[in-house]
Image (cartoon, rainbow, N blue to C red; front, side, top):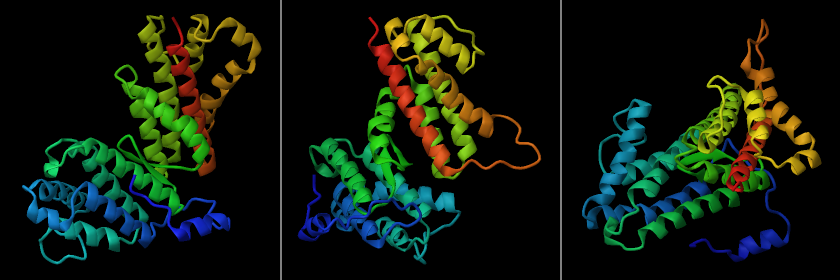
Length: 311
């Protein structure tokens, strides 16, 4: 891992002066430059465009072309003429006024690292799979160091409001759902985080419930348990309990578990976003959405691990 603890970092840590909250609306210039350094090493630098076999230029051109199309421009500002795609992307990223714009660039560039460079012949370098993993790890470390509340996980930039819960629930949920059997809930859970990042909290809650119900249906399909296609959360919970997903002695010891499963995710969604809002528009606050995302994650981890433990 190519991140070093410099003297200044140690002194900041020892003086307890490190920031203890995350920022979401600012991408500091220092972090932007650090990200450019990561891209130089993993995706290729400006000099590599001229010395490589065209792979570096092609990769940067794909990223630049995608951003141009989404913004509806021919050239990314501040450029006024088409030229080196590396320089165009770098200058655009360093000068972007909005955090969201920077995150768009980071997500696209690291998707390229994650998906296009994992071959032994990229830039004629071996061990590139490990290099891509290192780049992603370095990016997430830099986000954390700069107290910027985002992480690159499973091909997406996701918002991080609780590092502990994120590490113990969200990341395991993504990992456990990243299989063919759980493709539906995996997509819905990622969609919930994407809506949350975009400020679409009602849509995020809807996708939380979808992921919860889809996970239970996937478990039933995997185990051959019978349920009706239109079953909602309550009926599906009855099925997984009756089939022994949670052993009887656990059900007695944790009598509140059923109530937690029945009331938490469905109730949060139903009261806040699942039905008509009436004459007065309802607003779902960020802290409630974050709570429901974390509860959904921990519940999905519980369900999938419980299924894995069955004979």
